[in-house]
Length: 154
Image 1 (cartoon, rainbow, N blue to C red):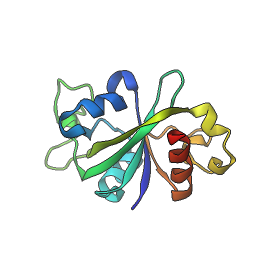
Image 2 (tube, one colour; image 1 turned 30 degrees about the vertical axis):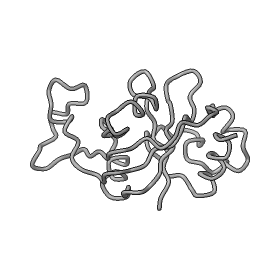
Image 3 (spheres, rainbow, N blue to C red; image 1 turned 90 degrees about the horizontal axis):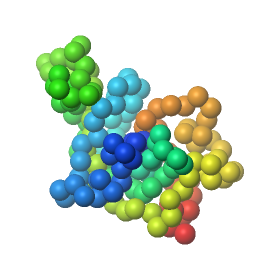
Image 4 (spheres, rainbow, N blue to C red; image 1 turned 45 degrees about the vertical axis):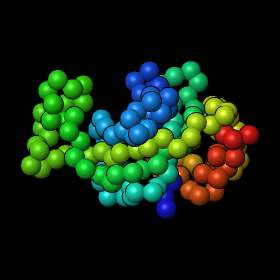
């Protein structure tokens, strides 16, 4: 099993939105970065767990946990000219962008702000805390995962 951190803006799609979806499941679409695409297409597997991170909000931070329930497949939003994630260079016969399906697992009793994550020496190597890292999906080590989950459940 692998662990991930996946960012979303809560005013676009937050953890409460995921919880309200049918079967508490949704596709994670709209990622337009090749490194992130490769993670979703090649590395994320059914059963992997991800921290749901609220970005571009005050304060940004970790809100809870979701599970990968469908491995990477072509992101259909890239083909829809009416969708905000439309990419005219993406071809359904040779898709450029991929997505995964995620399922709500839990909302933490305690939201963990980014500033608090930065104060944790156990998380000093965490990708999201490294200067210049703006990827919307990053891998998380088991040690980092365990520490953050413990914080969120306190």
